[in-house]
Length: 111
Figure 1 (cartoon, rainbow, N blue to C red):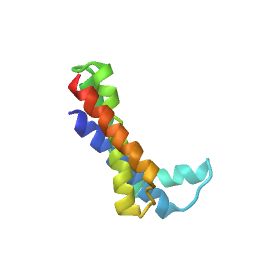
Figure 2: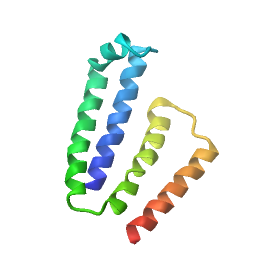
Figure 3: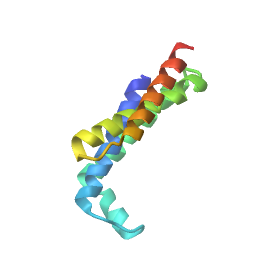
Figure 4: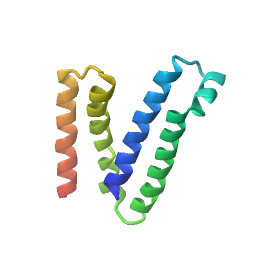
């Protein structure tokens, strides 16, 4: 259930990014409100809402000190997917950071 919540949140972030790329640069205000009703942004928000509902179920079953660090796996997925989907540059320093996150999550999972 944790991985489902993390995965939905990450997919939501990717959908939001795609929607905002299609909307173009916006300022805070009416532009952001308009962008909210575009298909990709709306879908991203639905994914986030679904992830939140799953997260509430996770919190009812698992210690927060165990579950919360697992959210950092979303960073790993989003960075990798951003590189694949949006051709974003992923520096060596970011890759090192991803490795540290993975090591930390593995350590938390074993505790």
